Image 1: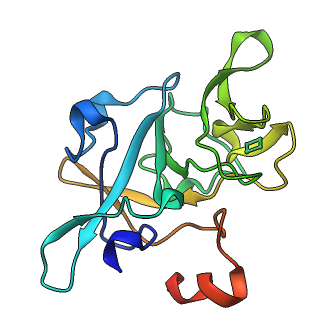
Image 2 (image 1 turned 180 degrees about the horizontal axis):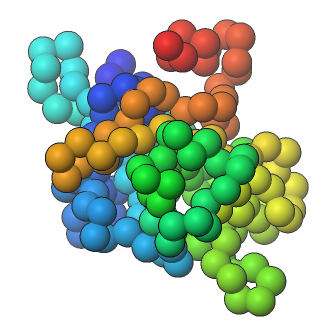
Length: 172
Ligand code: FES
């Protein structure tokens, strides 16, 4: 169903935080030290807006880094101006929501509260600590007017999907 689909091309990124739930995420709300949690908002079969919060795997984390901080293996083509990047926010180890954390020297990284999995959001969310076996999947985005919009679904298979059986159909 549309509510349980992963993020798809054309989806608008809207706040998941209860205080701003459903409002489009604005560029000026983003920073490098604190992730903004979002859901993709698509449309149902009648064209009515639907927030895809029916599957916890669709939750997103968005950052804005100063120019030059984002680097490979981040797909820079799939960011806004090499500064704004979106990832799936569900840990690839066992599916917890990943949060902000502190790395060596106090630098901001992503940390999973369940078993201390650590990811480097400046480098494609590669794993830098703990048990996760895969990076968090990057979601390709662009700016359309003042809205962040998905240009396709996740670039790698997110937690909870089996590549052959139930993920391939979403990849266009
Ligand atoms: Fe994230 Fe285990 S679920 S480290």
